[in-house]
Image 1 (cartoon, one colour):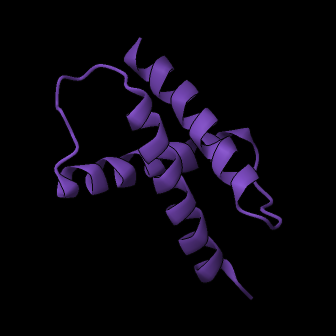
Image 2: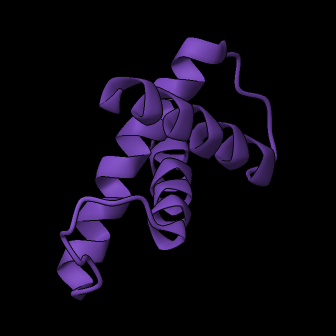
Length: 84
């Protein structure tokens, strides 16, 4: 069940990140979910460094927001490295 919820949250976070950052990103649903999942790790790392992470393992709205922030950061880094 954790894998399914991770994929769903990753897809939501990645999709919202792609909507919030203007520009064209040729990636499908699977890559959008991967973007969101990697963004969740980045956002969780940022929250941990700032002391915001509670560590009880339950879903929080703040976790989704940090996942979106992390996905935006990963998307911007992806664009910098994939430029021709």
